[in-house]
Image (tube, rainbow, N blue to C red; front, side):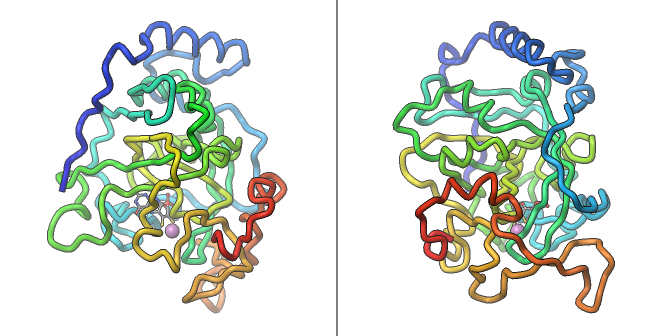
Amino acid sequence: MSRYHPPKIASSEITPKGLYLNRRRLMSLAAGGLAAAAAPGAFAAALTAVPSAYKVDAKLTSKEDVTTYNNFYEFGTGKEDPSRNAGSLNTRPWTIEVGGLVAKPQVIDIETIMRDYTMEERVYRMRCVEAWSMVIPWIGFPISALLDEVEPLGSAKYVAFETLVRPEEMQGQAGIFQALDWPYVEGLRLDEARHPLAILATGLYGETLPNQNGAPIRLVVPWKYGFKGIKSIVKITLTEQEPPSTWNRLQASEYGFYANVNPAVDHPRWSQATERRIGEADGLFGGARVDTLPFNGYADEVASLYAGMDLTKFY
Ligand SMILES: Nc1nc2c(c(=O)[nH]1)N[C@H]1C(S)=C(S)[C@@H](COP(=O)(O)O)O[C@H]1N2
Ligand SMILES: [Mo]
């Protein structure tokens, strides 16, 4: 099993840091961004998020539930394993290698992202393929802001994401029983990744992202099933071909590449018509059941991305 190796991009290809910072700072000041320009180096300050237009008319899932009921197989397959075991992960230093079909490949330091990207707070409905859901106040920024930095080429059609491989700190990657092939991988079509709802999250509930939720940076795509939200990202690659995704590779008949939340297309082993809101007034079946909405309630925003596609085929 291979470890994560430091990126191999020539330093001449990396934008000089000073220029990069200054440009970002000017842009952020021009836009009236409060967060990014303030107190460089002050890590907590970077999480002072600008309020965003993205809100949900529903009760927030408690921070306790958001941070103790998780899926993160690198730390075990049980819902409580990530909160128990993810403390061993070192999230500094941390870099993200962004390359592939781009004009300006870069190795971006997480500190640069925390300092220079304008973070917004966004309350999103989240819906797992296992038919439970949460409402989570994320902090993050649109992926398109990062894609702009590397300038995707015209031939780029998809964005591939990769999680860290580090068995010394991720106990689910060590030992004889391996639940998945590592690294965990995911992908989006480029136009999906560029949609303003799709963000890279660095925090939740006004704080730095807890390890079990995918620190230091993870994908959040609220109109798709939770498994698309790949955690602890170390690599982003622009590609021409549809990239592999972990659950699709494991069982293609159950988990598609698109994975758009769709109450009309059942998982082969269970219905997707309703969902259980974690933590809400436990009823007869252990949690408040609510109807699942097409595209998880974001149809007005994203349905046009799939115009003309047969969603029973591209599930
Ligand atoms: N690297 C990695 N990312 C992952 C997973 C995983 O096992 N490994 N699980 C996915 C699944 S199935 C879900 S539902 C969400 C859960 O995110 P949360 O624990 O922050 O709610 O993370 C997704 N991202
Ligand atoms: Mo999931």
